[in-house]
Amino acid sequence: MNEIVDIHIKGGTLVDGTRAPRRVVDVWIDQGKVLQIGGKAPGVAKKTIDATGMIVAPGFVDLHTHYDAQIHWDPYCTISGWHGVTSVVLGNCGFGFVPVKPEYRERSLLTMTRTEAIPYDTMKVGMPWLWETVPEYMDNLARIPKGVNCIQYMPTASLMTYVMGLEAAKTRPANAAERKEMKRLLHEGMDAGLCGFSFQRLGPNSTQADFDGTPMVTDTMVDEDIFNLAEVLAERGEGCIQVTQSTGDMRADLNFLEKLAAVAKRPILHNAIVPTRRDPTVHRRSLAWLQRCREKGLPIYGQAGTVRTGFSFTLEHWNLYDASPAWRELTTGTKEEKLKKLADPELRTRVVTEAEAADKRLKVIQAGVGGAIPKLMVHKVNKQPELEKYVGRSLGQIAAAENKHPIEVMLDLSLAGDLNVEFLGPEKDFNADYMAEMINQSDYTIPGVSDGGAHTKFFTGGAYTTDFLYWLVRDEQKVTLEEAHFRLSALPARAAGFRDRGVLLEGSPADVVVYDLAKLSDGKEWIGEIVEDLPGGEWRRIKKAIGYHAILVNGEVTFADGECTGATPGKLLRNGQAEPVAKERAA
Image (cartoon, rainbow, N blue to C red):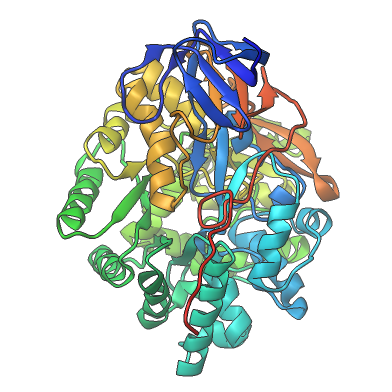
């Protein structure tokens, strides 16, 4: 036996992502692909990974990330890369940095500082601008070192701004000439390897507003402009659409998604389906709708909000109450401007009044993204002794003791603490039965949503893969291991157009995780830990992974027992695959 192969994964339990029963079998990898599964050794391996007692499975596919800037300074797209993610999708929600004219670069960075809460200085220092057009951007993305694979959406907000100018894109529909040009540019982008397009439409009172408090470009986008782009995918017979939509009229939103799927004739990734703790009708209604769509031949997938993560925030950085006009006004501007607003009696009254009169949608948003305001705990108080008495108490408890509204307590503490008082969302009583039901009762739901790379100071959603496995599979035993790996790898790969990824079969790209299920963890801290590892001297919250023996991307080990190897074998997957597909299209 003289043949030399790259890697032998020995003695592990293979869960191949296809839903096939697990089995103890050896796996050989060579030249970036799975060479052989089981049988007699095909040759002598340069490296052996002892996987005895461990799970061997396909690397995870993270569909919803905002690593568009971070991938330039962090090839592994952590947090996700620490937690077994070997492929990511960039450009979600319609946001990104392409196409962007040079004069709009600064404004493009500012856009992401609020809606996705990515620090400006970090992006400014860490992401060199070497492109304007989509083909130039894709060539740059292919060239930079990567520790994960990636595919890229056309960010619709960037596209509209590029064609129409920012003011027009925010205030009116596109005209016929502009729609034609947007179609041309999307075709050009798809020729360069884009996987489709994305958009967020959350209405004039967007939950995720622009840095100045105005809606994002796509938040008020008209149906006709979206259908215009969908026609490109229908014409090409490729690509998918990622949609984050909530206009306050659920029936209208779902009707629109059905129309969009009918026009595009391509997969729609709908964000997001989330269960409540006590009312199963909420997620069951969504699952029933997904099933009806499939029966009509509409290829809609539901990205399920399975991530369990805490929120911890100060009012210096917080933006996720933006659906309330008064809150949005209060929390926009410089730090000095925010402090002045906190002391404004009229604005304080408006904030409280809006909260009390809020419709169901706003109250659900506020409770969901951080926790109901009365239940928020005072976590840190800017090292001010006179405020220490409040630590560990909820805003509701303090309000009752001081005869104030909980929001008044929040504003008073923030003002006294120079905006550095930190509020901690309560550890939620997540319902494992309902969470598992979202997975087990529909063939079209995908775990997530990580939002990796975004809201860097608030939460740690990039750890969702590890949490899903140790919570719902190991501890609660509500989801089988075979089903979990199908949902974490194969199904998202299929939905987003990754070719040959998400499964471990002979000939498949060797994106692999080897882990000890009994030891799997994302740490003890509900809200993770703070590290100062971002460019520009900025900090973020992280959760490191525990229990991963090896993570491989395209047949190379990127992490060994939690330590980064420095290897950067990741690839830009143009049109979902490593090698570009030659296409000819009539002008």
